[in-house]
Amino acid sequence: MGILLWIFSVISAATHFFLCPLALTEEGLTLLEIKSTLNDSKNFLINWQATDKSPCKWTGISCHPEDQRVRSMALHQNSLHGNIPVEITNCTDLRALYLRANYLQGGIPSNIGNLSYLTILDLSSNLLKGAIPSSIGRLTRLRSLNLSTNFFSGEIPDIGVLSTFGSNAFTGNLDLCGQQVHKPCHTSFGFPAVLPHTESDEAVGKLWSIFPAKRRSSHYIRGLIIGAMCILGLALVVLLLFLWVRLLSKKERAAKRYSEVRKQKVHEASTKLITFHGDLPYPSCEIIEKLEALDEEDVVGSGGFGTVYRMVMNDCGTFAVKRIDRSREGSDQVFERELEILGSIKHINLVNLRGYCRLPASRLLIYDYLAMGSLDDFLHEHGSEGQSLNWSDRLKIALGSARGLAYLHHDCSPRIVHRDIKSSNILLDENLEPHVSDFGLAKLLVDEDAHVTTVVAGTFGYLAPEYLQSGRATEKSDVYSFGVLLLELVTGKRPTDPSFVKRGLNVVGWLNTLLKENRLEDIVDKRCKDVDAETIEAILEIAARCTDANPDDRPSMNEVLQLLEQEVMSPYPSEFYESHSDYS
Image 1 (cartoon, helix red, strand yellow):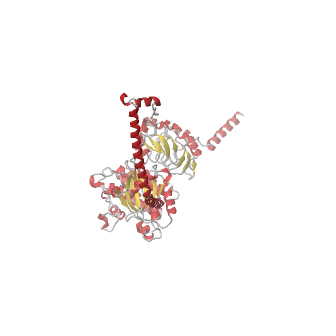
Image 2 (spheres, rainbow, N blue to C red):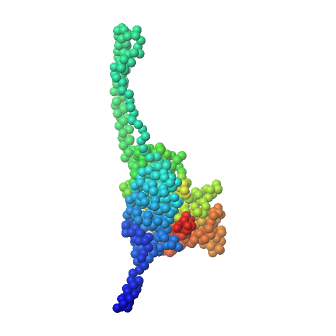
């Protein structure tokens, strides 16, 4: 009997061993709770399975190789809906949290300050709202914070590391205030005024006392009364004369007023201002007044669609205004509705369209103003002045531009083909963070039935071969233009530089020629001193795939973005390389 019981126990243990997998780690169970609270519309988290023994091979998850603890969660640009799960703070060794460009709502969990090892926190381009929790200030290791393009409100806590981040970390949250965004919070420090009350008889007594005693006789008072009556009579005569003159000119003034009112109504009928989603918090009359006053002194540049002006408001807020030189056939209602779609697109690497104004003689688009100018300026204009971009700056610009373009291709509704990707349409802020501009304008402002679309909606040197032949723009023709932009960043040369145009080549053909001759050193911009040969080769390989003659063989922008992130950020940002003693 004892032997039978022993055999039965052995069989039961073996059955349990083969049929029941090893238990998932505690952090894996936490991640499954996080998954259950999110609406994963694209099935991005489909391989997060309870049957796995470790979450380290799950999509978006990176672990430390030694102890398999979760160090990074990269869940950005995956159309995730819902609130930020509070369970994230249970991953106590988390170094980086990327939730950028989703549809997350609600606020930031107040206990996020418990992630004491957190180095990077990116919650940008979501629908988050409420106050920024002061607990973020306790994250002493935090090197990178991005809360931009949300709906946060209130005062930014000036606590701990929160006081070290500038306005770029909070841009696009119109209701935020504080020293970080250089916007004072409105509080009242005034006190109610207390006016002294004086008794009437006391006041009269004081007034009467100014006259000497010898002048208080009845004769003196009678003289004062007669003098006052004379003055009143004279004033009455003057008033009657004034009324007579006014009546004589009444008809003339009425006719003039009618003419002015009619002129004003005609002006108002032909003037219209639209601000998108409250993005331009100024009185309409002030905005229109500033727009009407723009002249040649305010010009900061010109592009394929018109002249660009700098507009400074009364509080020194600065915006870029593009005066449109072209128009498209169709009603103003359709034009304005399509503009409103462009105004609703928010991303940290896209230039924000804030409003539209129709004046009697022009159409104006109002954008954020980026004082550092365009990538074209830095690569081809500032070099002679000794200002050039180092290699790390060029990588950051390539990565940010790819993020903006991938957002247009894959996350917008409707999706947008840019049609005119080039260095002059990549604008830079004070931190050299890139912002893609003029997206959607090529389709909006050019008559699609016109044959010149094949030339006008784009710039020579950047245009894909099939686009030049057919005039049909696709996501893959944008990818080709982005590949040319990568080559421009590496070489420092324009796509149609005279040095190789004389040989009948553009930058793509010139590159292929040098690669065949194994002349890599002649490809890289000589002004760029800190280049890394391995990264250069990887970037050139990505550019070659983007500029493949066959559009079907080119990667999508999401794939390009993933390749760039692997080269620029893989395996972890430099902040992640900490000693194991810090980690333990």
